[in-house]
Amino acid sequence: MTLGMMATDAEQRIDFEAMRSYKLKRIQAQLAEKDLGAMLCFDPDNVRYATSTAIGEWSRDKYVRWCVVPREGEPYLFELGSAQEVKKEICPWIPSERIFPGGGWLRGANTKGATSMALMGTVARIKAVLEASKVAEMAIGIDTVDLYMLDALKSAGLKIVNGWDVMWDARLIKCPQELTIIETAASLADGCFEYIADKIRPGVRESEIVAEIYGWLLKQGCDRVTGVNCVSGPRSNPHPHDFSDRMIRPGELVFIDIMAHYLGYGTCYYRTFAATRTTQKQKDLYKKAHEWLQASIEVVRPGITTADIANQWPTAQELGYPDELAAAGLCVGHGIGVSIHEKPFITRLFSAEPMPIEAGMHFALETFCGEGVDGARIEQQIIVTETGHKVITQWPCDELMVCSAR
Image 1 (tube, rainbow, N blue to C red):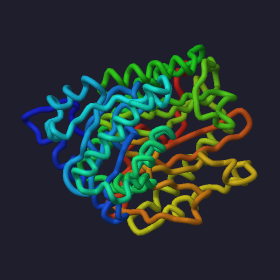
Image 2: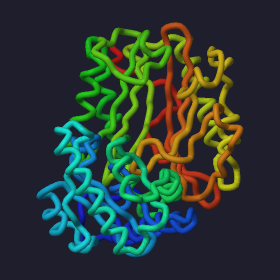
Image 3: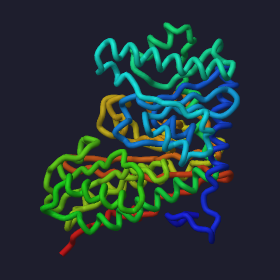
């Protein structure tokens, strides 16, 4: 079930300790399977997954905080400046002796000498915790970093390898606590569509809709908004995957994607509306998109593959595109966890290399149908259960909804 937004002594809500333990075991199982000594994470979503810590979005592209997850034992967190002292107080699940100062070389934006010194200090601290964990001689996985740091790590004699699949595979199957948070995040987006439907009307700009959504989500307790797409009228076909300052006009289709995070876990959730009135052509386009979506949802259960889902969708040629690469992103599925796009990735483009569907997966399925100046986009989030699936996005989408009708 979805839960209340506040902590209480009167209900057992999220068992965060169980969730943290599960995630660490998932990472370390992947390290053992792939014969790596440790995982060095700079990606903010991987750092959150591994350590249950976060800092402001401003830090996302600056490499000022990271973590090391050894093959055995607790993670090490390298936190920015004074924030390390804060983490020692508010994150007791990480022993204080495993929290170190982070900082950074700011992707080389500093002076050459300062950048070199920062890199040397960073590598020395990383190597020290790897040696303490007795894995410094083993291959070390890394997710993402700039070339300055990559060169510095290799120059220090560390065997750095691509570790992305360690984290993607660890994050693939969600525990019950993660799934509860994910469904609660979806319930927030449900509420946001109720709020925003009354504001979709002629004379309102796409950017105004986006601003209203951001404000509502943050007020309701979301801790991050990856983005909001709002597309109207002739901008809806081809799908531009963004928003603009265009003003909505009567009789136009408007589709909106809410990508918000609650307790770190994301949503990706499209709905299409008509402003004031709708035509039979628009209804027909919407019906096609909905039928394609429902067909792909109905086959979801453990034991099938991503190809079984993708094969329910029209080909690129049926959508009016020359090949699947040109049509990428129109009929698609993607895992959602602490990132908006995770494994499994579901598309006709890659259906020749299918991935098995397993219980505990969570992903979005989305379809698009467009013709002329009209495009319709619908998306549902799915949890794979032991016996089938559960759709957790509840804002109605069986019929094209008309807003601001007079």
